Length: 145
Image 1 (spheres, rainbow, N blue to C red):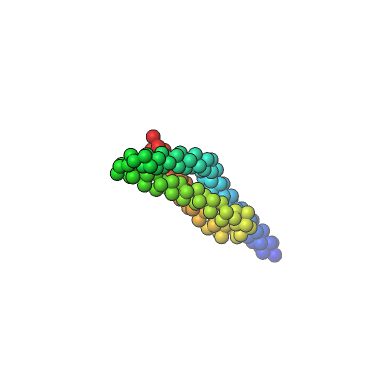
Image 2 (image 1 turned 120 degrees about the vertical axis):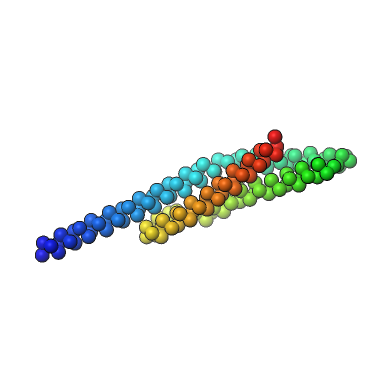
């Protein structure tokens, strides 16, 4: 009888430790995901600022064209500015889409294994948003120098 009771206690302790480890992993992943988001989110202001600057640049090019000062170089600059502006829009949209789709509170209610899979997928997705954002910001800043 003591043997059965001891086995039951050990099994309960083991399962409790295993559950705690899973919860810790979920918490750690969630923390990583939110840290990446928090690193990138302030850059959305820079995106808006650069988009405004690109719009101004496009208007300047258009005004030169309107007074008869057009060239292949200006046309190329305009195309490049529009392309970069589109990339900035894509970065902004990616962040907004990610935020709208993020369901961290719901995921924490899942079994640990499922929650880990969810947060790993979210981490991959927010890292893609980060890469897209940093590339588009860098390209815009370089163009506007």
